[in-house]
Structure formats: C-alpha cells, structure tokens
Image 1 (cartoon, rainbow, N blue to C red):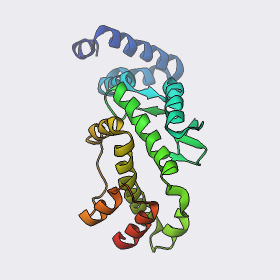
Image 2 (spheres, one colour; image 1 turned 135 degrees about the vertical axis):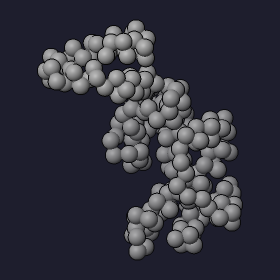
Image 3 (tube, rainbow, N blue to C red; image 1 turned 30 degrees about the vertical axis):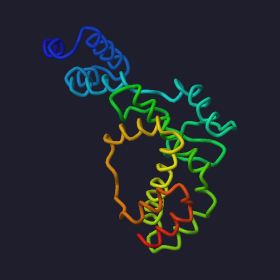
Length: 209
C-alpha cells in the first residue's frame, strides 16, 4: 500500500497514516492495523475533514461576545448532541462542525445557528405555545416542521434587516444545503414584512398545512 499512499498523499499526511496504523496495532492488533492501511480512501476523507473541522470550544469566547452584543445580556453557550435549540437562557450548538469545506465558513455557520436562536428570542417565537398549536394537528411532527419553516422565513427577513452583512454570508453558505420546501408568494410576502409576528406564522400554518 505504500506506493499508493505516496501517490495520493503528501508526506506529512502519510506520517499521520502510519502513526495511526501503529496506534491501531497497539489497541486492536494486527487486523485493525491492516484494515486501516488498506482503506486509504477512508483515511484521506477523514483526514481532510479534520483539517477544516471547527470545535465549539475553539470559538466559544468569540461567539459569547458576539451573542452578548446582539442580545444585550449574557446567554450561555453549551454543547449538545440533540440538535440546535434554546431554553431561552442557554443556546445549544453542536460540539463540532465540518459541514463546509472551509474552517471560516464553519465559523460563519456557528454564527448563523446563534443568530437563528437569538432571533427566536428577540422577535417573539416563544410568545406562543408551539407544542399546543402543533399538537392540535393530525400529524404534529409535520405541523412542527412546517411551523419551523414559516418562522425561519420570517426571522430570516428580520435578520437581513438587522444584520445585512452576516445575512449575505448566510445566503452564500445556503447553496451547500437543500431547502425542504417553498412557500407560495402570498405567504412569503406576509412573513417577510417587517411588521410580521409569530401570529402570522401560526396563521400561515393553518393555511399551509
């Protein structure tokens, strides 16, 4: 496998490939090490992903100052493996991001996740009982996903108005992600008006469901 490795990887990467093989030999024996040496494609993919991965711990201080400046109060940041959400006091984010092929873009993605949670607090998403509203529908999960998309449309419009520079960056990154659905023009126009409130999303849910 050495000729293949030298043909496909720079020397510093090959060194990591060999060190990892030795570590696997110590921990899992010969077969674990051999599987690693043979599966060069998988090693290259994982190694490249590590190069642009960004850990929350690396940027917590910067993100904390950023969100404090937006909200005017201290909000805690915490790692979560349950998704991105807030309990209105703490903003929960993934431990690591590697969705995008540049570290700076993954940093902007962290900021976008924070801004969406801040916007929920700042622009009144939690002024209604979302669980009660969506549970009234025959398929509550479907209703919740649709409500989320309606609110996302409304809050994106507010973010574009309040933070135009960051929003342009968010739009640039959006091409990497598939949108789940589209809205009719009349719903989009109502939700993107700066006067729109969470009640417009609730009304839109009843019409769109």
